[in-house]
Amino acid sequence: MKVTINQKTFERIIDYNQIKKRIRLIGIQLNVTYEHQHPVFIGVLNGCFMFMADLMKQIHMACEVSFIKLSSYDDSSRRDKVDELIGLDTNLEGREVIIVEDIVDTGNSLKHTLDLVNKQKPASVAVCTLLMKPNSVQYTFDNIAYVGFEIADDFVIGYGLDYQGMGRTLPDIYKEITS
Ligand SMILES: O=P(O)(O)OC[C@H]1O[C@H](OP(=O)(O)OP(=O)(O)O)[C@H](O)[C@@H]1O
Ligand SMILES: Nc1nc2[nH]cnc2c(=O)[nH]1
View 1 (tube, rainbow, N blue to C red):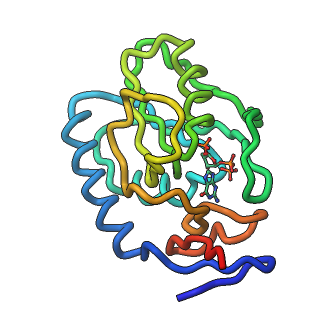
View 2 (view 1 turned 90 degrees about the vertical axis):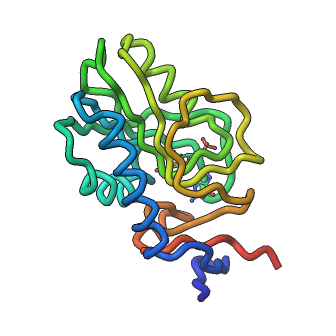
């Protein structure tokens, strides 16, 4: 199945049923790991909104939810600078923190988020990302504990991820076709 947005064509690589199954498994892992704790989930907007909503429905321990908003991409091209559009509004000192991302690509956004979170001296920080591009990431992260799918270094859209602001509402995930 293919979709076209502003002259770029994308083909489906992961359907929503696969995403739901993977999220159920990640939810089980999180429920076991944090069973007797009271973690704070921090979603990184905008891209995380669909993943966060589906993931949180699988979480059964007492927890809090908060968001930050970063922007590092123009259209489909990377910028080195990460802009913080909405900052942290929760005190994380001594807390168990789980950062929720839609995708770790170069890792710039995650590096920025971790620096922000770690400044507040949390008790622990784990990262949960739906997608990860292992060939693209430019940092060594030791706390990416939950990964939905590892994917190739293709530009992807759908399930929260956009191209020029479009495509976020597609339930499945698509990759750009280059030819
Ligand atoms: O690992 P990186 O190379 O930093 O890329 C990952 C980030 O890029 C996207 O955000 P974007 O800056 O496009 O903003 P958006 O979430 O509002 O789409 C995505 O949601 C991640 O947060
Ligand atoms: N939409 C989208 N945003 C990204 N941010 C980092 N990588 C990607 C990607 O492949 N697609």
